[in-house]
Amino acid sequence: MKRVLLPLLLLLLVFTGTAFAANALPRPNTVTMIDLGAKSCIPCKMMAPILEKLEAEYRGKADVVFIDVWQSPEEGKKYGISAIPTQIFYNKKGEEVGRHQGFLDEKSIRAALDELLAE
Image 1 (cartoon, rainbow, N blue to C red):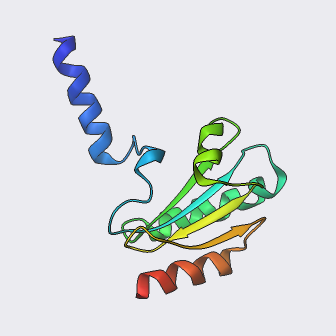
Image 2 (cartoon, rainbow, N blue to C red):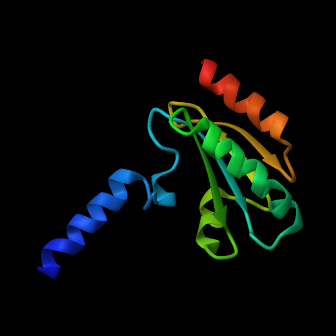
């Protein structure tokens, strides 16, 4: 029974988005913003409520993803960041179209996401 339940549980997690792997970013045909930071960095803490709000508002239209590079240092290397927080924006084709280092306000993030969604 356990041999059957585990694969089914994993499939359920993947298809519901709960187990959204960082290596699957950016998601195909989806505008994506990845914020690479750390939960204990001050500017990152300031951005956390903004990212949570935007993630909920843009759900189904764009992915807003936070990756803690102190917990997963290989992700920082993968994206070639040199400072946190760093935000990377991708268009629907999965092409990087913008990168910003440091705190980024809600208005600026919204403008970037809306511009990419309008393409």
